Image 1 (cartoon, rainbow, N blue to C red):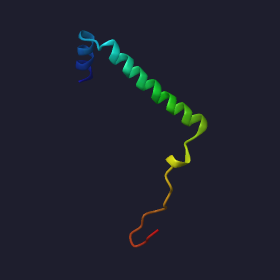
Image 2: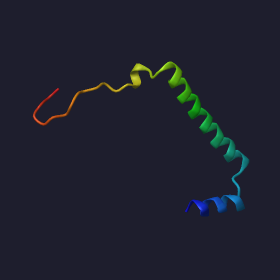
Image 3: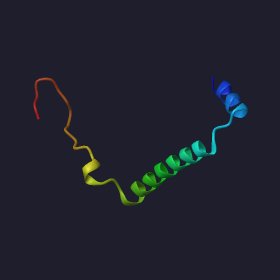
Length: 59
């Protein structure tokens, strides 16, 4: 399936605007990952651990 898609892209390449859009999205994702790596995840994004979910017990 991927070979068919690659051959279609080789025959009809995407427009320059679409290429710029994809590259911008990838750059934004890399920026977010880099910021989280160096500065950590904010507290509001962390999940509060609850402990094991056992039947019959409530937290």
